[in-house]
Amino acid sequence: MGNLGCGCPGSMAKVIDRPATDDTNSVKAVSELRQWPVQLHLVPPSAPYFKDAEILVCADCVAFAMGSMHQDLLKGNALAIACPKLDDTTNYVDKLAQIFSANNTPRVTVAIMEVPCCRGLDIMVKEAIQKSGQNIPLETVIVGIDGNRRN
Image (cartoon, rainbow, N blue to C red; front, side, top):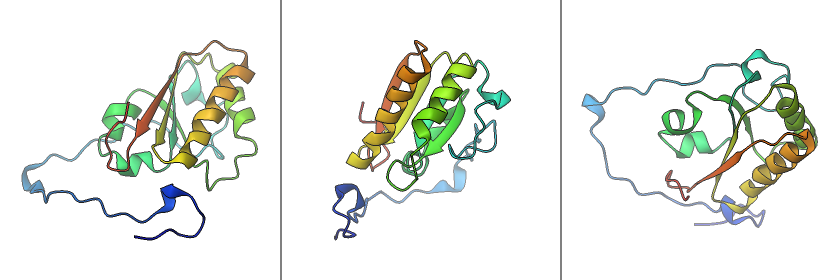
């Protein structure tokens, strides 16, 4: 196992051992995605899918790590995805604040990975809620690199 050289423990290569599964009898999961686009850079703050909607702000990696992400987190929510480490996040707080203040947002969930760099997304969402001037309940979901919830 090695580090990619950037110093972040979240970038360390790691193999996740999983037992082999026989998926011949399994049912394919149904997508719970109700909108497009989903990337925070691309979503318009005035998009109709944000109106009166609970919003999931999700780190990009969560959907790949957590096999049940659609059923456990996305179902019934509008979505904005972002990566606090690799994206240019300069305007994220302002954009999220616009989304929250313009759409009567009743609740926000932020889903992040357990790696340190992901905490930035949680911080940005908290700042955006404050900047929006709205009193919006916030839940933070932390997902381990093994796909399991940590909280």
